[in-house]
Amino acid sequence: MSQVPFSFELYPPRSAESTRALHDTIDRLAAAGPDFLSVTYGAGGSTGGRSLDVLRYIRNRTAVEPLAHLTCVGNTYAGAARLIREFLDAGILSFLALRGDPPAGHDEAEPFLGDLESSAQLVQLIDRVQAERAPYEESPVPGNPGAVRVAPRRKVSIAVAAFPNGHPRSAYSSQHVDALLAKEAAGATLAITQLFFHPDHYLAFVERARRAGVTIPILPGIMPITSPARLARVLELTGEELPGELSIALEVEPTVEGRRRIGVEWAAGLARDVVAGGAPGVHLYAFNQHETVLDVLAQAGLVPEPQLSRPSKGTS
Image 1 (cartoon, rainbow, N blue to C red):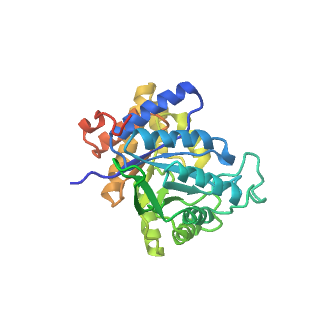
Image 2: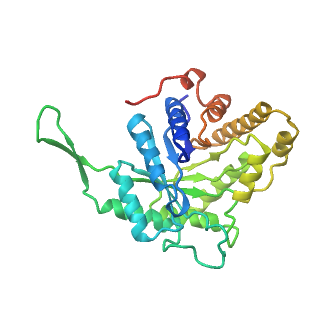
Image 3: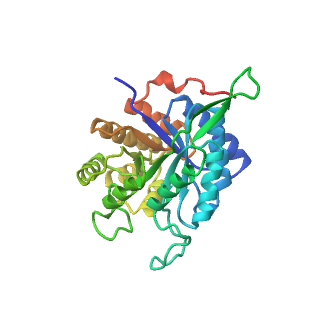
């Protein structure tokens, strides 16, 4: 049986010390052989430069594909186009196009800041910016000064978000499926779901999306919940319903390690069930730590134990 594809999400560091720790985490995660490592981007450009630094580290120091998050909120067409060009110039060819959340205190009745109104528009802009570039790329020929090898330029890959239980701002029950159709029509090549707590939430959503005409792969996003505080925070951010069984288990467990074990087991069970149901892989939210998500993969049987301790790939 071939290995089930997996990937991880990281966020930019906030200090020099956390940068060093993140580099170690990237090396450990890269050693497991993920399809890609995605790096979040702050609304309004608050972490754009630091995101690019992390993406460059992934590209230059590992053999793993770096994937850049981009958001509409606070971005103009011109500003987003400049940022996309900066990522492309750094060799980043995979993106996650997101609408993003409105700024804190923003009145939902008013338009978001910026003139990009949807992630589908951002998908089209990424394609348009790349199309403006030369359709080929040149690389030097070793031992032959001045000579170059010409090859067709690789097309960008553009992921988008999907919402198994509906988007909090959906105006009607199937709007999140219609929105995913629009994103695919705009050029998206992959969807990654927001977290969910039961395998049927993902599997039923995929079935609805396929009936509606969505054909791109839909990757389940899985988050190990290792404390009541983290659970409360993600429920606040996503609007998901409280998972009673998980919540009670975390609340009654008195130790940090015990709560971590509960979160790993829950996430591993989700991963096993959605893969058994036909998921094309799993995408794990890593919180800039490698131990927990690697334990999830191991407990789910998706990665052999020896593979997790393999040295990092790539060059120094």
